[in-house]
Amino acid sequence: MNDYDIAVAGGGLAGLSLLYHFARAGKLRGKRVLLVDPERKSVHDRTWSYWERGAGPFDDIVAHRWERVTLANSTGHCTCDLRPYAYKLIRSTDFYAKVNPVVDAIEGLTYLPARISSVEKTPTGARLIADGKEYKADRVYSSLPHPLDYREVRQPYLDQHFRGWFVETTEPTFDPDRPTFMDFRTPQAGETRFFYVLPFSKTHALVEVAIFGNHHLTTEAYDALLRDYIGEHWTRSDYRITHSESGNIPMTTYPFPRRDGNLIYIGLGGGAARPSTGYTFYGLQRQLARMAAAYPEPATVAPWPARHLLYDATLLRILERSAVAGEEVFVDLFRRNPPARVLAFLNGESSLWEELRLMSTVPLAPFARHFLGETLGNRGR
Ligand SMILES: Cc1cc2nc3c(=O)[nH]c(=O)nc-3n(C[C@H](O)[C@H](O)[C@H](O)COP(=O)(O)OP(=O)(O)OC[C@H]3O[C@@H](n4cnc5c(N)ncnc54)[C@H](O)[C@@H]3O)c2cc1C
Image (cartoon, rainbow, N blue to C red; front, side, top):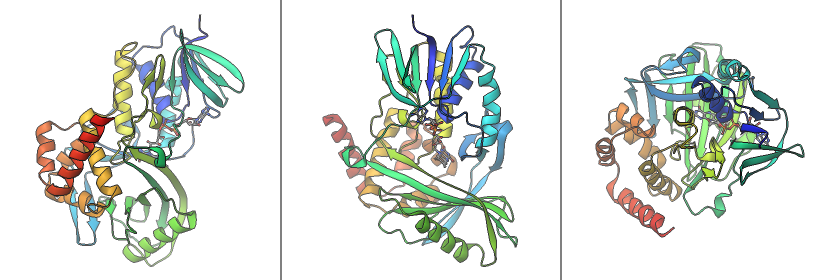
């Protein structure tokens, strides 16, 4: 007999969310549950933004929501009314404060503050080695990072690397009702580079630079881009940086393994990031809620519909090869379509009809060529 019914490797967004959804669905009553992570997450280590139609299950901890966003590139800008969608932001502190009590209330929970060195399936379930000791479970859900070298991946692959500053200005600078979703007004350097501004008040915003490309910058170089952008487009007066965050999200249609017997992969390492955008939060919650409802079988559900992965492979290849500039693709998508259609598509909840209408608004020749290339390429794999 195994030591646990369920073990969760890694207690970040995916691990904690899994336990939250499973506990809320009543699937952990009488179960022996193990959670392994060197630290229990509680502090501000990131902010999660996502968009959603109407009300959602995390609305009580949404710190800010916006119904309009601006996009800009070197040829102009557009302001989009997102309704019936809203763009929402959750601080990790509030997220952990909501899910941790639900996780802690799981009767059979053991929390193990330890580093895992390996996870693998066994004939009767799966096992993990943490700080040199073996723990066996009927099923292990692993959210450990899946190391991937873009040079060895045949599928399209672009890192989304970013750095953001929370700034407090001395003068009214931002419109708290209008975030900047993507602002490409910066030299693109042969990549896709944009800024992202989430205003919390007239004097307080998160300003972030994001780059789709496999060559990362030094912290000083990201900071220089942020400084120039703020000085050029927002304020020449003084401002204070109250907090900063940075990170990297692999954007790829690489087929992350989702299951190896009773070892189930979740989170970024399970392919939960939307390949064309890097957005993860919304799709991950939807996937884990469905897995909780279905437990014990099917043990996993796809984070994104298969045909969306083909669209994303097409777009990523186009960006990788600079066949069409990223600043054109993204701004034109919003300019030429109702924003709700684009947002439904990016959330993986659009109909085939909506997707065809969306495709009719992109440059036909490069998209058709790369779509065919990815479709035939995938067949050969
Ligand atoms: C700064 C930042 C901002 C982001 N913003 C957004 C956003 O706005 N919207 C969005 O949709 N997505 C966003 N993302 C992407 C994505 O939502 C997050 O990366 C999310 O945290 C991924 O969840 P995860 O569980 O896969 O990874 P994590 O949340 O990083 O959790 C992994 C856990 O595994 C643990 N771990 C790692 N190695 C071991 C080991 N050997 N043994 C035991 N435990 C281990 C870690 O301690 C960690 O707790 C952002 C990512 C970052 C980094």
